[in-house]
Figure: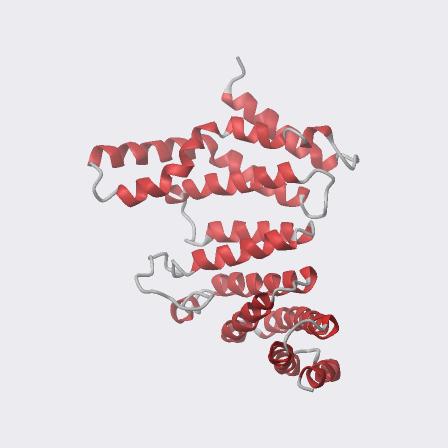
Amino acid sequence: MTSPNSAELSLLSKLESLLSSSSDRDPDEDDIYTLFCNHLRPFSDLSSVPNLKKASKSASQKQQQQQQDLTRSLAKQYLSFLNRSLSVLPKLLSAPRANQSGLFQAYRLCIRCLEFLSSQLSCKPYSIHLQRLRLMRCLDSCELYADSWDEGFSVLKSLRDIDSGGSLKGKVHEGYLPDMLEASEDNDFVILVVEIVVVLVKCLSMVQSKDHHDYERIIQLVEEAMPWFRILDAKKYEMFLKMLVTYLGKSALFLVAEKSFGADLVRSFSMACLIHYADSPLKGQTFKVVFVASIGTS
């Protein structure tokens, strides 16, 4: 019978071998998700974890202790494997692959398992969200823009439930972004939020959605995000704002060219784009957006 350690080494070896494979479609990719599921089978109770947490107040101390012991045991056995896997998988998914579905399924599974172990990790409370941002980038790189879009808004929703200090928010928060008051003191947290916003705006420009609600969401999201951009140092502010307005401009041009959107939406999106162009390193190209805005308001 194969020992857990040898099975782990074999799986990691197979995963890392895909990095050096020159084949466009490696047969090892076909069963990679199944192999991950089998190896991480002790995490199969993940789906019941939220219920356990909700019931923890009324659960006996013995039940709580059993859950803590289980979590510590899983962390001791699997944390190294998860960290190595989460280091390799983004490299494999930095560009489209012929059979990337199984790799993405394995990637998501590893993140869920790591989240289950988060109570045993000495790290910032949003470390899992950083992993999910990497997943967003991979989905984007592999041209899975709709999936990256869904992941991005899901991550933002999760971030609204915490602050940079790790405590749960007790109040209802309106809007898409977390409360900036305390978060603004944590530069890594600010960059996390800003980068998620930029990737979401890129996704909209690449998908070329015909749903007017998507453009309305982005208008609101960008408006909420601008105070976060201004906290950044000058170099990062310029870099992220340049990317943001580039993608906004592409979406604005699509809105006008499509001719199926209402004039109010085209006008409001174009004017929002114009405002941010004027503040960006691309302000020399503002005439392009002025042209779009003039069409949208005509």
